[in-house]
Length: 298
Image 1 (cartoon, rainbow, N blue to C red):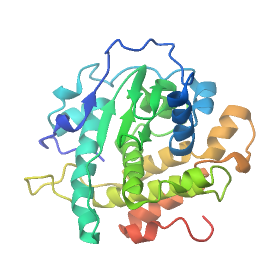
Image 2 (tube, rainbow, N blue to C red):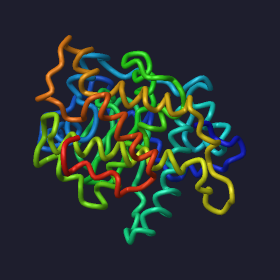
Image 3 (cartoon, helix red, strand yellow):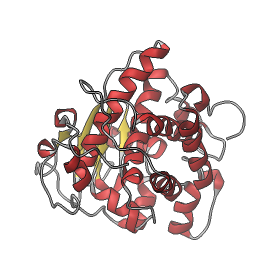
């Protein structure tokens, strides 16, 4: 979905840690308890670091057609349409506005998560991460982390659409993990970490479903202090863009690209078909009660 050009963004909701110079390009995950925990968290909650290394080596840098800049410059919907980092800011704003209104209607308080844009490497409550891990959520500091370069990898290496909702879906999925942290379903991933019907897969599919709920409401929920939403009306092309991204990060697609074969017993996120189906369940229903991936087959 494209942003309304005159929508007012709040860049203070996103920390920009790019170019800090604290980490070298060659930093790797590991070498201590913190790094080990991060590898576990990422393999359960985000893109598998080993598979990403095999496919890409390192996520390319860059902010989109408008060139590099800082997140503090992301002030309007027009900037979110022009720059990937600003699209992250705008999507974070939309997600925070939506969930802050939606969850209390169901008796659940919404503590707003932190969001960080980084490049090369970043220090987190779960350890140190490099760009190779892709977007991820760290429950220890309740923060979602995004390297804008990943979105080019998603398109060029994983075959996802370059449309805006393909990228916004990724941000919404990571915020889905924050919702799971709030409602208590995130820990299922650690209890049963692999396999086509595992807790890890069920956690990821629920996050896809939660992303779909946001997508259903995002073009109608008003931005704070206004009567207009951040985003323009969703189109069928937008939906196709989101579904292309959901399919691109399916375990079967990633395994096939990385190794030439598919091994469901090693799945941690679900197949392309499953990820698309659960995103659409959230989108079609708009109801968090329809996102129960923990009973029956998925």
